[in-house]
Image 1 (cartoon, one colour):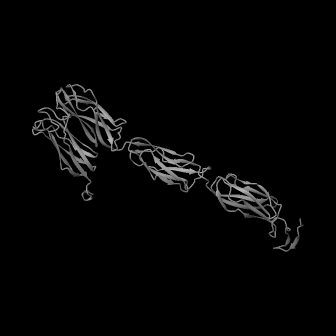
Image 2 (cartoon, one colour; image 1 turned 30 degrees about the horizontal axis):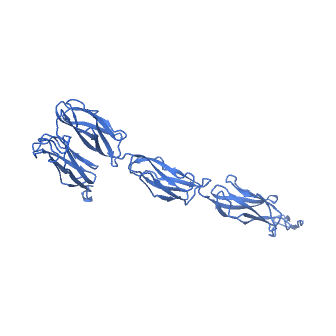
Image 3 (cartoon, helix red, strand yellow; image 1 turned 90 degrees about the horizontal axis):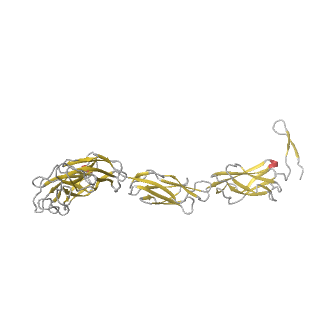
Length: 446
């Protein structure tokens, strides 16, 4: 090695001696190649990092030991080999495998004896997608047929848990639907969809699928609850025969339903004796998990017809009838002479078209016997299909003309089919149809 050459010079204030290194002595290490690359977390960079050692004249220096070292052990990664001797061009190279953390990472190359260092930097992006998992929207509940309040959200990550962008996620549902049926992960690795439950009450599931990823399919579980009460249905116990003052053999049973036909639990049903005396127990009962409620009916002391109503406030009324002591009319096609006839009796509505909320249709029933003569003193109950109805029952038994009148209005547009039953046992063959239309904007009071 050439001995250093000494120079004496006056410098600054006071002067002094400056010793310069001779040719062949390393004075600088540079990032020759491989700086500022972009790669994937956990994987080797596309090109090696190459450092060069030069002397004071900028000429490469061979035979110098260069050490490569990660600047942050917590980031992870690897550089190999970690010690390299510079070649005839003063170059030393190593392969840098990035750590698992996204963003900027760094490696230093240094000449230990001369305290010379240079830094290489690289930017780490996510590696290939490895796993998909749910991060939001599971275990929600809402009324059947409605949208869940929160979106379903999954996250796609690489082997280090970093979010992966641009992955397509397919969504499906056991009932109802998901919108959209396919979505793509964003920069946060997340994809989402909206969930609309099916019409049946109970547990429903949805799935998020990404082919070949761990955790796929992701299963979301939701509970569809009953919606708002819309109708009360007679299930059993109607048109029984019994003895005066005795309890009927079978209980009276009704079911409270929402618009999708699901039973609604926990609502009170009131049982009210209408005619014939007697009693009912309990006077009020709550619907069970299937929307069913029941009561026991004890007939009045006299022979003949008994009637009773099951009522859910704001929803509707269901009428029951029973015959005490073998009295009452026949069923189906009509009774004998003098009794109500299903085929000869009539039911009409006027008008047959009304507007929702404001319109009222008058329902007229004329009860006749098999000969066509009016039947007086019998009770008529009316029912109507659909939801949102207000149905006024006849105020009392038929008069000498066999006539009983009621009324129908509705808050819900649609076609309403009205039926009439006499003494709870004779259903009149004729029905009436009332068309309920949406009220025009000009009719709405502001």
